[in-house]
Length: 126
Image (cartoon, rainbow, N blue to C red; front, side):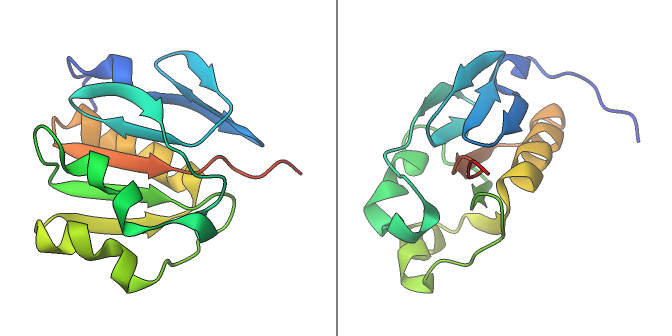
């Protein structure tokens, strides 16, 4: 499959590892919210077990995404479905995966010009 860089390539996830994420070439040592239409921003979450519905609200400001990817850290962990209620009510698709998979999927969807957002926990330091 041929992938073309989109005009939003600056938002692409360009790296990740234990305790960090890299978006648009900038390293972050905290959880991030990234979107097709906004620069990366801090997500006040130390780990997926702290996820609450109000922490997902920023993903629904501006142009509402078609799909939200939730990167849960090193392992795929499913949050309580009640936490996802704001996204469900907004009729946004939701995918839960480990952070590495969420970063890769975000880049593919971004390159396709999709309205995508991701809420990413840092992979845990080893």
